[in-house]
Length: 231
Image 1: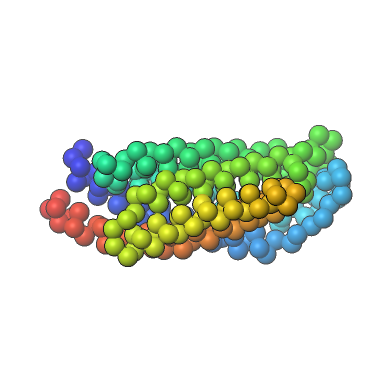
Image 2 (image 1 turned 120 degrees about the horizontal axis):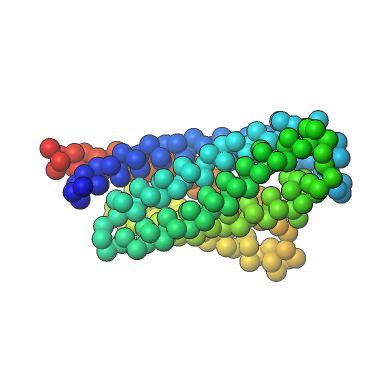
């Protein structure tokens, strides 16, 4: 495949993955905000069957967001000029770490936790319950979305020319700085993993929505000269 063909493919995949990422991040954030916040006492599984499947709806766009983000980062890597290819590869690597953690985390909820709760088999689910403020779901989400912001940081290095690219770069860099700031701030204030999880997801989704719209414009503009060269 020639460099021009590779760029055209990267542009097309990048455009559609940017649109898909924007839609999924919007659904994830919106449904998450609309889902009631519940305080469930230890062992965090008693009586929660009545809240399902409604309390799990937000996980579906969150689950699909993981592979969509990897495809978006892969398109960045394929489109990047040779001098910045390393940054694209690093961004893709951290995106894969996030996606692997998030996908496994949510799949366990769908395939193990939810069916067990609905059948009343809750004896060993305390650590896996989403209502456990120091459970596996919250911890894995926090680490996963932290890795997403690291992917943002490396992806930001790929955008530097023109106002549109500079805004995308600023969004990605700001997302990383804000999430790290929350992590450090909450550490000094007596670490609250739930607050960090909520903050990191909110920041990451906001960055994905805003940057996704701009990336759609970016890839649409980039497609014109690439197609002219190909022709």
